[in-house]
Length: 317
Image (cartoon, rainbow, N blue to C red; front, side, top):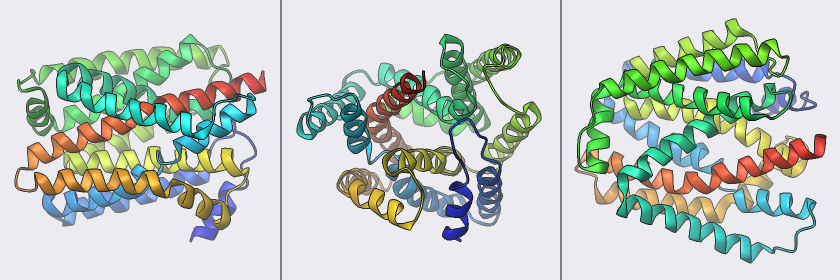
């Protein structure tokens, strides 16, 4: 199975070519995961979601230091690995501190950062050139996906948010956020397509959104998030990162990526598992701390990927 995926991925020559075969694999995986959501109870779904996120989900952000070091070396920067590591660790701890001191602000920033990051990963291979309009599209589309998830599981989301920030927000916020982000996404997609700055198939994109809606409505909040986060975001991101580091996708490059990711991945997984064990008897609180910790390690990853994409755009220009 892995060799077949490798063969498909190696046919891709540059980032402007679509991923039809990869999309097909992800769609099959999505419906298989959806089938699991139908036959298993929420408790089993949560266990599967944690395994999913702790494996591929965390792995896709565990090689940031090597990615950043290679990007900097291309620019002939004198910054060394230790200095980059120090900045990275300080950024993560700073994010944790913000969640502790100002949780409401940290939560908003997490949604904004994650929204942009999800949208960037989805559209970067279809974007002809970077611009303010493409950045707006990335942000709007990613937040639309998040609000689609929140709105489909509004009660669970509301409980988790209350646990994090200690007060409830109206469920109508999810509907308003979904509407506004959806309108902006549609408008800027149309503008960019008409200006030949975005190569997409509108029917295909609507089909994807339909899949997300079905998944989020059928699965629990955590399992729905895990399906999107791992299958639709982390796996394509892993492909991009491995290709950036090694120039090809095969068993050797994948193994090398995993080995270099291992220290950070083990630290992240150990931290998350400790939180889950600590609050194992309180689902809402364990989910709240889980997403908070995930946010803390997400912030620097978003900035690293943004930096890499900027470097690649500069090199192409």
